Image 1 (cartoon, rainbow, N blue to C red):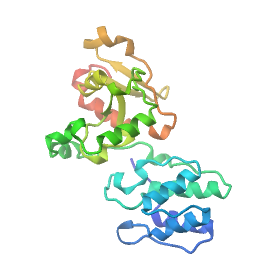
Image 2 (image 1 turned 60 degrees about the vertical axis):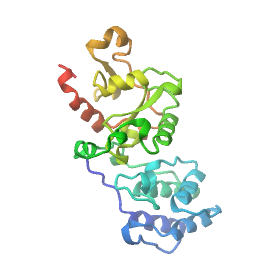
Image 3 (image 1 turned 135 degrees about the vertical axis):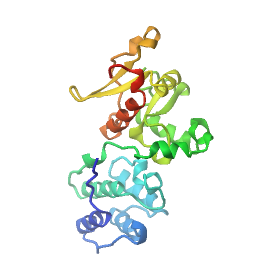
Image 4 (image 1 turned 90 degrees about the horizontal axis):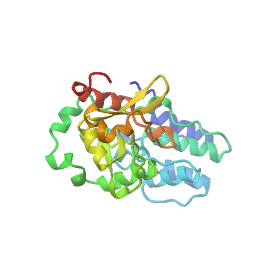
Length: 261
C-alpha cells in the first residue's frame, strides 16, 4: 500500500505560513530543529519543555487532539528517536489550524492500514527467544497499557473487562518494535489469545458490510461457539482499528486449518 504523505519540509512550510513565521527546514536525518516547536509553543502561549516529542505532544493536546506513539520517531517503523514523524507533523498542523479557528484536516486515509514488513518472518526468526515472549519483552507493560486504554480496558472479542486476564495479541506475530503498532494488536482474554495464536480463532474483515467478525474453528465450537460470527469491539477512533493487511497475513498463516475463510 502506497502512503502518499507529504514530506516533513512541506508540512513545516505550511505550518510556518499559517503562523506567519520564517520557514524552517529539517536537518540531517530528517530531524526537526527544536526552535520549530518552541516557536509554535510560544505563539500559542504554551510553556517550553525539553525534548521535541514532549513539546509536540503539548501542542497537540492543547488543541484537544490525540497524541499517538506513532508521532514520535522512537515508535516509527524506521526506528530512531528524539524527533517527530511525518504523521506527528500532520497532527501538529491540525493543532495549529484549530488554534487559528479553522477545522482540522484529520489524518490521511493512506496511513490508516498498517502493513507488516515483507520480511517479518525472517526478522522474527532472528529474535532472541525471550523477545518472542510477551512477558519478557522490553516496554511490553507500557504498550499493553496503551492498547487497553484505546480499547476501553475490554477484550475485543468477549467484552471481558477484568484487565488482569487481558493480554495484547499481535495479529502478525511480534518481529521487533515496529510490529508493536496499534493496528497490529488486539486485546484478548488470555484463553482467546492462545486460540488466536494457534489459528483456531480468526478475525475477518467483511468488505460487504464493513465489519470485523469473529470466526471460531469447528474443533472448539462446543466451548466457544457463542463467539462465532459476533462483531469485534473496536476503538471509538477508527484510526486505531485492526489493519486488514495484518488480518489477511494472519489468515494466510493458518489457512491450512480452515477449508473456508
